[in-house]
Image (cartoon, helix red, strand yellow):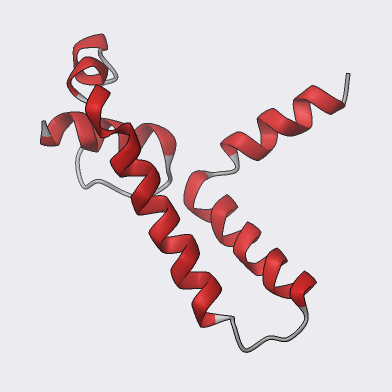
Amino acid sequence: MALGFLTLVSFFTRIPVGRRIEYKEENFKKALSMYSLLGAVIGFFLVLTYLLFNNIYIDLIRGLVVTLCYVVITGGIHIDGAADTSDG
């Protein structure tokens, strides 16, 4: 189960897991119940970033900082996908 979660962390984020992970189908099957946990971990870091920058009264800057944190954590994988849908 831990190997499955480490596979997800390695695949969907830039967080180092400390070992080389092989992307095998069985590792992803082991991790099937862990996708929501990984989303909660990423969300925790984003909420923490939001709370740290909560004293910035300009909403645009605070939003940019949280978005930048998301890109740093995930490598921008979903933002790249959203951009691909609009560039034709």
